[in-house]
Image (cartoon, rainbow over all chains, first blue to last red; front, top):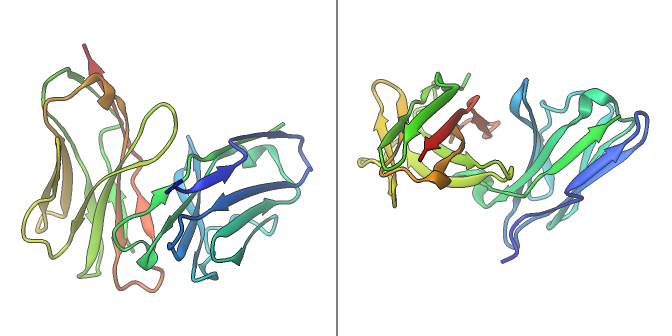
Length: 114
Length: 116
């Protein structure tokens, strides 16, 4: 099992550009969670999906953020246009049973918007 | 609303000593799960241990144990015989089982440093 795979590992982009973060779930997992980690705000849940359906997107900060799950094994988080305050580490995590017993996290994408 | 509190921003411990990381929580849901995750300097989030609210015994995983005191709403992590590799951020987390939102929320973390 390759685990939860995120790409890219690092992304540096200019303010105003579109950024797309990608996540591949563990095979057999049916829940997907996107978190953002910053020094100031810690780990924040942005959105989560269960069986490809968004369940809770109350953590998505603004309309500039959008997330999709086009199939059972893949998800994207898009920021358009990006701003310097979006700089953070973005984690995705997957689980079975909506994370009843915890998640498996990916390695994260460190995003820097300059 | 669910809430997780970790009151120790940082701790220093001598190698081979036991260490306790504090965590208190608040929830109105009678069924919930408690978790601890480790985040080393490399950045990945590593699951350590899980405790269910109805579990009669404290959870243990190798050198990790969870001191679960339900009445006090505390879920402290105990690491026995600490090692240099235990130096990391540690996050306590909780999930309400019956909440419609049903998501894991995390505390602010404790940075543990092990001295040789």
